[in-house]
View 1 (cartoon, helix red, strand yellow):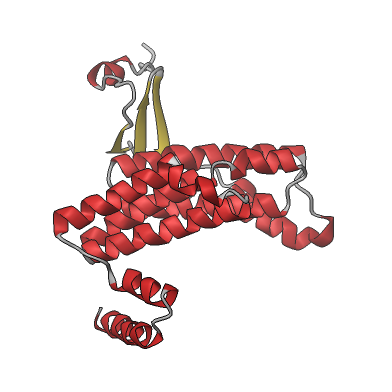
View 2 (spheres, rainbow, N blue to C red):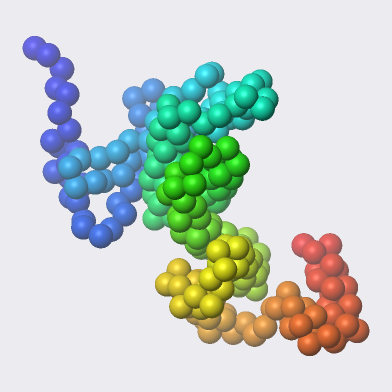
Length: 246
């Protein structure tokens, strides 16, 4: 009798929930940890180390690593061919799936790592893009990746260093997103952006829940903006002392 190969039992015990990222970490038969995501037509299983699909393109961990090696070897003759663009797109999507699973599982450090990899992949793709439209097809998602990173960094900081550190992480994320709007000459749209609004809402909810006023970093920014240089110097010293103690 052949070994059973369907996943009916898994699907039955783990029902799909529309609109919800359902993820879990399980042990594979060989003992390694794998990440599973329930989707409407079944499930995705991803590796937790290296590329989510477990492949090692060119013998290295990711497509980005392979492309960097190829760019170094080929020098000025390096181009993102159609095949290379296809592999970039594959890796972009794979890391997106794993990132949202880690966020759902509140595994914030690994969510940050996957967001940083995606941002580095986007930087490389933009620097070597064969076509402006192909560049835009990725760059349009940069605020979304930064949004996820800011969320994860804030929650990780909340656990490790407290609410003020979490708020500062959100502020840094908002600054990076604002820079994109400035580059696109659309800064007037920044405050109306839904992702920006969600981060601002998270920041204010942290202030309310933990009774946090303006952080030292925010006070410093206010002092610089108001040309209160002596106050700014005192705040810089206080921030430096706090970092030493931390």
